[in-house]
Each structure stands twice: as structure tokens, then as C-alpha cells.
Image (cartoon, rainbow, N blue to C red; front, top):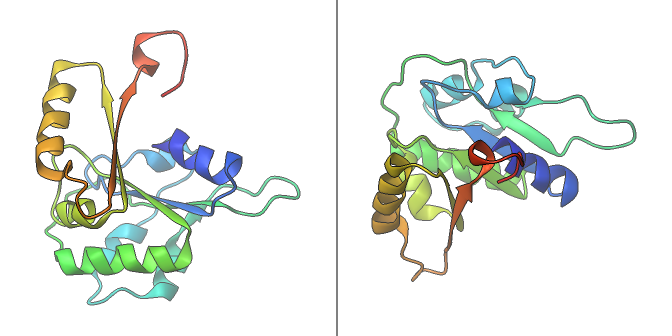
Length: 170
């Protein structure tokens, strides 16, 4: 997901936010060289979504000389996963759409509370799978649950060859 976010933000020049929704094993901050804060946890424990709180908790890498900040991260330190009101997660998604042209959610395969609602309402769904039987099974389940494009949504299944070859590409 990090590579996708960086590509959208830097190559395509699209203001992008990555949301690390894997609250148990949050790792996007680490892969971006950032120190995770309690941003996502704080937003999801608030009674309602606050745009100012979101803006204060976003993480970003130092801007390159002459370039603006196009890639931001909303994450939290790895820890226990608590139940989240799905309506609050949808409000967060809507708020991020107001702030950024693109929001990319890294949703773990165990699909924590609120993630199904994000998948149901996403304009574009990208499912990234490795070449393993376990990942093929998980992708099949996701295709069964969310592969319908009848409401105009787009669904992409992307195989990650990075672990099975010399190229570090998706």
C-alpha cells in the first residue's frame, strides 16, 4: 500500500492520504520512515469526526525541495483493536474525501469492525494479494462479498510479485 500511495502522490501528483486500518499490526508508518502516533485511535474513540483533529493527527514525510506535501498518513501505534461504530468510520471516510483527492485504506484480511462499510462504499476497491493459497482464498471471499460493480464501483485484483522475484514491484 505504501508504494501505491507514493505513486499516486508523487508520480500522479494526487493529494493522497493512506489510512492504516490494521490497528493490531499497523506498519505503514514504519514503511514510510515515520513514527506512528495515536491519531487514528483518537479519531475513532471520539463521539464524532472532527476535521481539525484529523488534520492535526496526520503524519507526512518531509517535503522534498520545491514540492508540496501530497502524501499523508493516518495511523496509530500497534495495539489492541476495539469495536468501532461503523457510522463513525463512514464519517471519517467522508471527511477524508473532503480533505484529499484520494484516500487509500489498508484494511487487513481479518476485516475489523467498520471495514466492510468502507469496502461497500468505496468508489475503487483494490485487493492486493500475494501468490499464496491463503491469499487466494481471502481474495475469493472478498470477490464474493464485494466484487459486484453494479453500483458503478470498480474492483481491481492485483497480484504482488515482489516476494516471488527480483523486481520490487507490484
